[in-house]
Image (cartoon, rainbow, N blue to C red; front, side, top):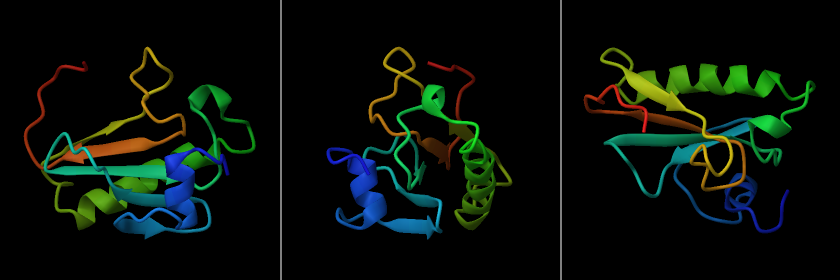
Length: 115
């Protein structure tokens, strides 16, 4: 756990969040600054700064995050009409929290722009 990382603190239970999913590897919760009616985050419990720091041993986490995103989209009622998965990497990629995370965004029609 990185001492100053908000996502590590949420995963450890020391900072409150609306937890939607958790297991030994991942935690999911609602984004505190939602960009759409449904805006969820999935984070690994292990502190990994971003995709560039993902080791071979931890690479399974990204697939598991996508599978959890699929389950959450279904439970949130956005799977049929569609949703967006986003993983930002680094400052220029728009990553605000330096802990690997996946956004699930949906609940309204999203335009085709990426930025």
